Image (tube, rainbow, N blue to C red):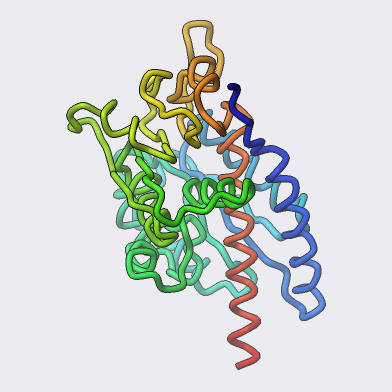
Length: 287
């Protein structure tokens, strides 16, 4: 048995084509969805991520603004920029690229973003909305994982899902999203004892800890769906995930590759959230 690949690149192209169509429809009403991205400092990885986000906006016919600042920017100055963007009618989504320099409180900055423009889904209001099942913005990476499950027609009702990792960005919101689809969810982490006994029960496994080979073939039930959120480098410097891909694909029913799996979906769901923010504005205007 060899697992079927869930191709994140192909699914992203399909979803971005839909975003492009919906953005064109909004333009008929005088609204061009707009995303502002703020980068503080010169972290090389952050620069690549930001460039990709801006390009994705342009490719889908959306408006993007990139604001780059020196690492010495004060917290007060950054908060003032966020406040100005909160009040800018041409901007529907605000993203502050993390990590921020050590002298800036990232939590304070995220909380300064208007929940109506929190397209990263990191604001406490967004987390609360997800927790209680109210409309809000879902964090992009777990949202992308849900779209991948949807793309293979996977029915989560009554299934056992195991999430490895409890971060606020992936693990916790992932668990909530799976729960909303009536899965029974086990959330594992670095203090979990006998992880293997839990993953062997799982119909769906989401690995999101940033540690190579945290999930190996002997830990996976035959036919399980495995979503690999990890981004690591092996000894040769090649990009790899949290899952022992070669081993696990011989056991799993479906698996996401790294690269080309969950990664492309993260930026795509950022586009979707920004678009939905603009659509909500139109809907509120109509009401």
